[in-house]
Amino acid sequence: MPRIVITHAIQDVDRWLQGKAERAAALPGATNITDLVALDGSRQAAVSFEIDDVGALTAMLASMPPEVAAQAESHGVIMPMTVYVEA
Image 1 (tube, one colour):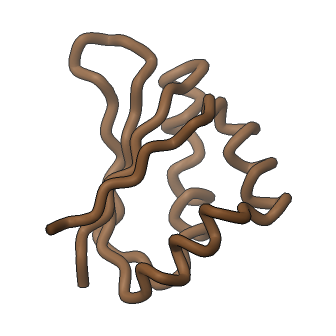
Image 2 (cartoon, rainbow, N blue to C red):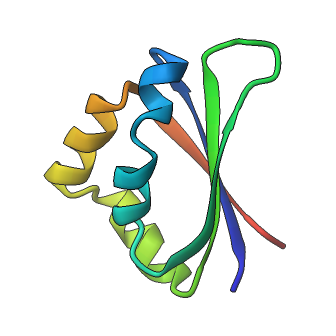
């Protein structure tokens, strides 16, 4: 399974970190989910994980379901997201 890293800005680090369980639930098929925050204290964050179906993830991110978009907003995610895939 390839590793994925998604980066984005956030409104508040503590608020974003409180959403870890919800983030994991929004990524069906994902394992080894890790939240990362910027070492310099800036409001940048990343989530990394392994996923079995990159195509399904790509489709979901291209047309994000309203409930997932609302969840991201409630966690303080500031769009856009940048998605990296292990080469």
